[in-house]
Length: 82
Image (cartoon, rainbow, N blue to C red; front, side):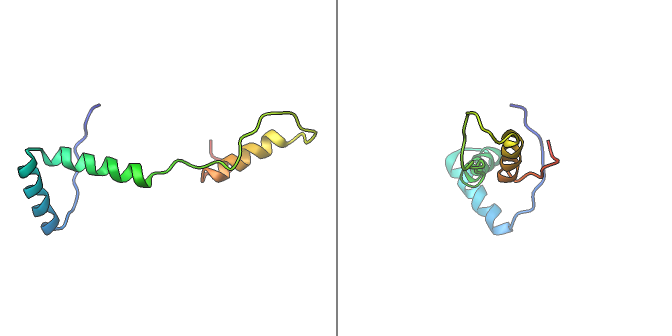
């Protein structure tokens, strides 16, 4: 995967701790920061949980439209977003 350069502002003490850690481990700061971000995102970047999923027929003709609206809302999007 291609990498992209970015700049972050970080507390000097935290940067010192990172420097000591990567020296001990024989790693780069890039690798350590990438691993930390991946772990943090895996824990905090949850996919939306849909309250239901159903397939079938209904006498209610707007069910599919209403269902899409519900899914959009549950996913945190406005009804007009695509």
